Length: 288
Image (cartoon, rainbow, N blue to C red; front, side, top):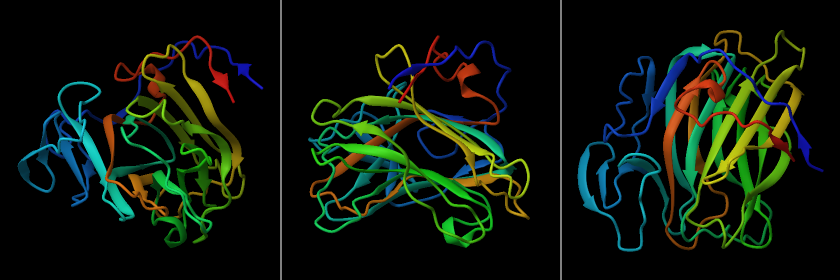
């Protein structure tokens, strides 16, 4: 069933933590004090024709089969899954923990994307995660993120994962929604906007996770996940989210080199629909 929500209206200005379109050509995240990208050998900053930065400056031409055109400007973050390998990940940290946080980024579907088939259970692939004092079972506070699984037709559906904290792992898949269709979505950019808030008090289970998605060229966002009354627990010593990663472990390995691009990454303490760095809020949101 499709429902239409009222428009957001005018919202207060965001307190920006980071807005990085990678136009610096590296992982310095300029003008974002307190935020940092972690060093990694598995991701790089690219232009349409060249890898320009990994852990240091590069000048490596793009493979002939790659298409690295950024969403805005000349640079983007490239995350490559090599053949038969399960891991590529870009981690980030911010100094001031946030119990209520917004995140957005543009994600380009790989031009050759097919969700890998796997005979046994466990074809889930990470999309992103946010956490407080420790990730998943290593945290007193909750970890919150998204994954995607195969839809049986080469595409994927995605869903939320929420750990209740207390050094427990994430519970079941929540809020299943279509993610990527093949072949039609190959090479397309989607914009994801995520809002996560912790419980107001210990044990109140009134946390929330909301996700909106818009494809490039669309005029409206679709609200794909709307999870209220969630057990999103604060850590006793880290009062909010302060770490995260983009992409991550692929339980089903890709049989061919597969490259995701990310551009215009934003973190904020208030709604990103009011930020000049993100498209304006639509007059109505379709909720699946």
